[in-house]
Structure formats: structure tokens, C-alpha cells
Amino acid sequence: MIEKLTKLFPLWAILFACAAFIFPNLFNNFQNAIIPLLMVVMFGMGMTLTWENFKEVFKSPGIIGFGVFLQYLIMPFAAFGIAKIFGLSAGLMAGVVLVGCSPGGTASNVMCYLGNADVALSVTLTSTNTFAAVIATPAFSYLFLHQVVPVPFWDMMVSILQIVLIPVLIGTAVNSFFGKNVENLRKVFPILSMLAIVIIIAIIVALNKSKIFNVDSVTTAAVILLNTIGYLLGYFIPKLFKYDKKICRTIGIEVGMQNSGLSVALAIKYFSAIAALPGAIFSVWQNVSASLLAGWWRFKDNNQK
Image (tube, rainbow, N blue to C red; front, side):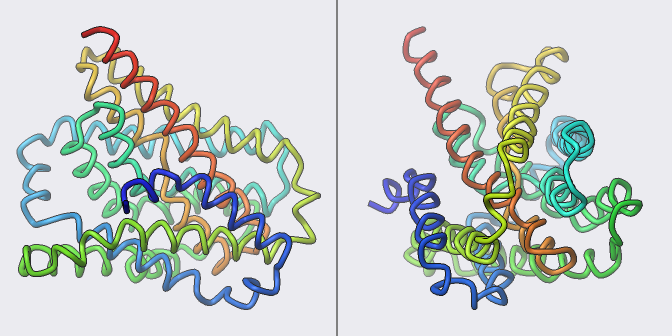
């Protein structure tokens, strides 16, 4: 039941976004809830990990390092290039770049499972990218945005530690030390994480209701293009290096899917409500596109049997 509900994430996201647009007063007073909600998502991610997962980094440092390198090579540079080419305003540019500078999204593990990719590698890459984000996200944000808007590098780094790293470590510790005793709790977190993300999306839509009609199709196209570039380069660059199909799929999904919730939280805290919109749009779109991509891969595999 929970798995079926989480697979319908794009539908729930659209429904909550529509509800927030029609009834913004239900959500627009909860701006301060965005960071706690994201911390719940990160704790849930930690609950899927054990300390053993981190040992995988040392067992396969080459492919893990390659995946992390591609994550922070492709997405920040692509985001900045797209924002410049599309001529986005300072606020929207900050939002798109923040999406590109964020680590991989937690939903990527599910999409790798659905797409017959390497789930163990996906989990390891997501967690490694998340830890790297403490430095990488504020560093790349500063690199690409400091001439456009003020970027508080150190404050952002502390925020990522608080919002991302600490909840993930606590969740990992709970899962590692208590294991079977928290199995029922662990099963609940996918639906809690999904609910937290759709509420974050609803809050952003409510806060930006008056501005949404000014965010034209160009911004949406920029977000879709960023996601698509992540999938394509994330898949075909490893393919050039002769990695097998499962690894190419995994890195493609990991690079293309971002922790858009983190970009939203940072945008609200350090930039503006309008800067959070690209992250909200990306969050909905990436789950739709990744579901279609994973379904296509599974369909191809079934036809080849």
C-alpha cells in the first residue's frame, strides 16, 4: 500500500500544488516549516542506511568517485549555462543554479530499482553526494551566483550541516544500532518523506501565487532541460568509459535527479520566495520524467528476455 502511494508522488505533488494555488491561506503561513520538513526527509534517508553502506565507498572508490565527480561537474555548470542562455531574472537564476548545485535526490534509489539499475550503487552515490554537498553546494553556488546576488557561503554550509548531514547521520545511527526494532518505523518513512516534499511544494506555490503567472514557460523549459541534460550526460559519459548498462543507468538517474527540497530550503532562507520556484517545479518534473525513464528501461529489458 505504501509503495503504491509513493509511486504516485507526481500526482500528489500536482494535487497539493493545485490546492495551494486555489487555497493559499492553507499553506502560506507555514514558511518556517520548510526546513523541519526537509530534516524529516533527510532523517528518513538515514533510516535506509547503515554504516556498512559507507564501507562501499572504500570497496569501489573508482566508480563512486566518478559518480560524484559527474554529479558536481555536470549539474552546476549546466544550470548556470541554461540560466544565462534563457536570460532568467536574478531570483530565478539563483533558483535554477541552486537546483544544479544540490546533491542527488532521495527518490533516485527507488527509480533505480524500478529501472533495473544498480540499487546498491545508487544508495552509496546518494549518501556520498549528500556528504559532499556540505562543501560542494555552497562552493558552486558562490562560484556561479556571487556576481548576481550575495551568497553567504559559510552560513549555507552550516545550514546544510544542520538540515542534511546531521539528520542523515542520526537516522543511520538509529537504523544501525536498533535494526529490527525500528523496522516498522522505517517502513513508514517513505510515505512521510513524500508527504513532507509535497507540503513543501504546496508552501512554495502558496507563497508565490501572485508571481506564478509571471514565471513563464521559459523557466519551466529551463528546469526540464536541466533534468534532461543530467540524465543524458550522466548515462552516456560512463558509457564512453565502457561501464555496463546498469552502472550507466544508475549514474544517469543519480545525476539527473536532485535534492530539490534542499534547493528550496536554501532559496527561502538566503534568497527569495521566487528563487524557490525552480526547485518546486523540478521536484514535480523529475519524478514524472524518472518514472517514465525507469519504465522504458524495464520495458526494454522485458522485451529482450
